[in-house]
Length: 104
Image (cartoon, rainbow, N blue to C red; front, side, top):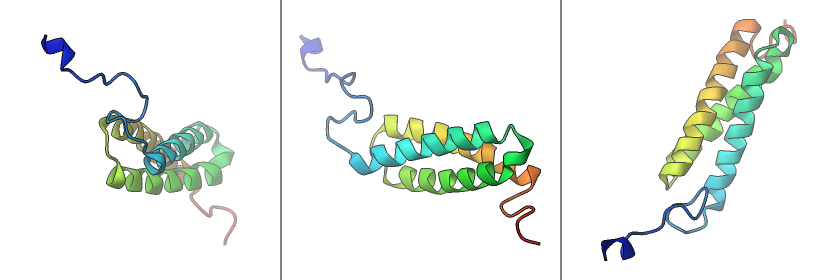
C-alpha cells in the first residue's frame, strides 16, 4: 500500500511540484540557448564577439535563474546552461574579448 502514497514525479519536464513556473522555465530556456550559442560559436576564432557576449548574458541569466529556481530539474538545466555559457565566454575572451577589434 506504500506505493499508493508516493507522488508521481515523472509527469512534467520542468516542474516536479506540479505547479507552473513560467519565469523559471523562461530563464532556463534562455540560459540553455545562450549557452549552446556561446559554446558553439567559441569554436570559431572570428566569432569571439558573439561567443563572449552570449556567454556573459548566459551567465547572468543563469545566475538569476539559480537564485529564483524552485525545483531540482530547473537547477540541473541551469547548471548545464551556465557551464556552456562560461566555457563560451572564457574562450571568447581568449580569442579577442568583448570589444576586440571594435574599439581601439
